[in-house]
Image (tube, rainbow, N blue to C red; front, side, top):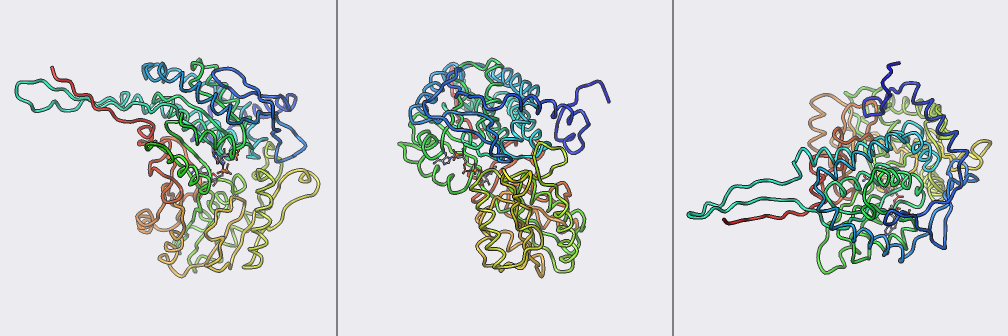
Amino acid sequence: MADKPFKLTYGTMFNPPEELHTRFDEALTKLKANLGKEYGMLINGKDHFTHEKFEDRSPADTDVILGVFQKGSEKEAEMGLAAAHNAYPKWSRTPWQERVKLLRKAADLIDERLYTIGTVLAMEVGKNRMESLGDVAECADLVRYSCFQMERNKGFIIQLENDPLVGFKSTNVSVLRPNGVWLVVSPFNFPASLTYGPTGAALATGNTVMIKPATDTPFTVRLIAECFRDAGIPDGVINYGTGPGKTFGQALIDSLEVDGVTFTGSLDVGMGIYRDFAKYKYVRPVVLELGGKNPAIVSRHGDVEKAALGITRSAFGLQGQKCSACSRAFIEEPLYDAVVKRIVELTDKLVIGDPTDRAVYMGPVVNKGSYGDYQRFVDDLKKAGKILSGGKVLTEGNYAKGFFCMPTVAVDVPENHYLWQYEMFVPILMIAKVRNLDEAMRRANDVNFGLTAGFYGSKEEVEWFFENIEAGVTYANRPQGATTGAWPGFQPFGGWKGSGATGKNAGGYYYLPLYMREQIRTLVE
Ligand code: NDP
């Protein structure tokens, strides 16, 4: 092996060296010797403890307490936002070059602690080891990408044309400036990248931040907040508070001290936040990244192996709990039997178990609620159609104390069944046979969502697919994943329709301006 230390990136993720596994195993041993400790919120650079606590347990073995966290209330919401508010004047006036320097330091610390954070993430979310490390590495790269965009756009300061006024010199400058205190509410499934992608963008552009992670994943988010603190980001610029979404989260949304919000999560909660956030004396920016019901279409000219691999990976990676998970496949008649047969073969071979084990592809689903959802959906699909693989929870031996569900392939479900529309967020793939591509496209687009979509077919058909599919991230002929896979600068991520509010993708060219407002400066000399 080269003596240069290995760096996990978009390019190396698919083919990691042995060193990755050795370092993950070492970090795991250390973590297991240190479980169950109590962690505070981080407000104004200091730990804050509340009277009420909650336990963070592993979904792979609910006897394992990963840590004990603080149950925030309205009081902590006010404290966190006040700290962010006080830190704003100085941070927003800190030259962007200086901000970017500090953020790059934080990104380097995240990389340095990649294995420690990755093992926590695997145990906390139930995500397999490669994907856990990928989430953390992507989070550092998202922060760097925001830094890169600040540089590339020279701080978003643009000299405009002088006014054509005879006898005067009238210069004009456009400056994008921060909004103030930015709230980041993140989901459980990508606690690293979906908390710190938005946070990095907000901080690079000069906002200060209050973070509220999902109740299932406070630990990962805390460890990364420490990287920002240790990088020397001033107190109050980034604050981390934990507690239930319905109370603590809602108090943050209802506060008049928030100047902008990024929410990533379900459509229902996101729409509620959108409406509640509008109950103010004027309009404040809202960035929403919501659910998906992502389709893959396979044409009669598609490659059977590539299609089956891509669909299976996207359907069952992270147990179907990705916003980009492939939950619907539409296959043209001539290839239907061959693709379905291969998907079932691949699905039957997926290894389910302890997500920290290097051989495992699928861990447990995240909590009891999702476990119950899976069983209910399977029952409904059994009544409506046919299950070709899976359709059961696993409860024996090593599975006894976790939320393990078998990857499930369902066919022959009538087109009007509610599960063709509903985001299930568990490992269930529904497949339909279609007569032609027009029928496939109609059904693919016939949902409220428009996040990702995949296609397998000829070169000419691919152009037609890109042109007609209603989705923010689209992939063609990709065996690595039919509908999944995002990386800043490569596949910026965002959705149309009910999958997102801005039409601009995270980790992409148009993202940073969402966190700023324009000021035109006209000076007459
Ligand atoms: P939820 O919508 O249940 O929760 C997301 C976050 O919102 C959590 O931190 C939650 O806290 C919080 N929350 C809940 N209610 C409120 C409220 N009233 N006010 C403020 N905050 C609140 O989503 P999940 O965590 O279950 O994540 C899965 C969902 O996220 C799926 O729909 C998925 O598609 C979507 N998602 C979208 C992505 C995208 O980029 N478009 C990416 C990843 C996921 P608590 O945990 O305490 O309830």
